[in-house]
Amino acid sequence: MIAIVPLGDVLFLGAIGEDVEETFCAEARIYRLPLNLEVAYSPERGQVHAGTVLRMMEGIEIPGAIKVLAITDADLYERGLNFVFGEAQLGGRNTVVSIHRLRHPDPGVFLERVLKEVNHELGHTFGLGHCTNPRCVMSFSNSILDVDRKSRRFCPSCRRLLNEALYRSGLGPCR
Ligand SMILES: [Zn+2]
Ligand SMILES: [Zn+2]
Image 1 (tube, rainbow, N blue to C red):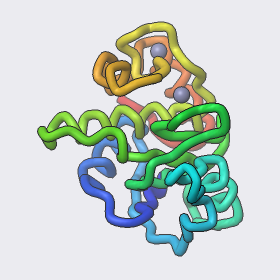
Image 2: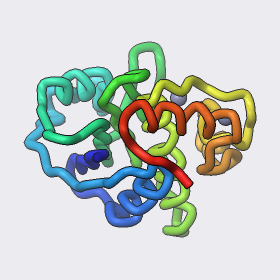
Image 3: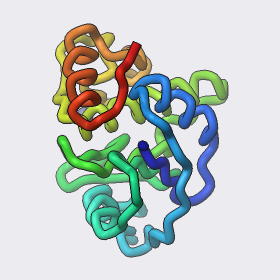
């Protein structure tokens, strides 16, 4: 099971859950956790430190959850970077995605961007690194233009790696 944890009000939770189930061949469940983002908030920057959020998630047990995906409306940053769309523990359990910079007047475009970042960060938790295929969801996104350029699908070689990781995690099989 993959746990989806909204931190604050997050749109599209149902659609995100459906896409996660389809993409990762796993059950997705919405979980509410009492995580206080103020602990990770930097008043100087007006942003939330992504690494601190991941550390806060570490101490929380969710029975049956192989991966835990937190989604927030807060703007995330990491040291040395102006912002990040999300951050994940490579090959680990936890990841956090921000929808803050993914907004678009067209809700369809907005949702598509969110699904791309969700798939990308969950891909990292299954051990996938960045991909050089610009259409692959595992390609690195430095800007919103990069997000719009890539698809929300894994390229054949990343899909193969992902399916192997899913199998090792006891998930799937993916059709
Ligand atoms: Zn990445
Ligand atoms: Zn790829």
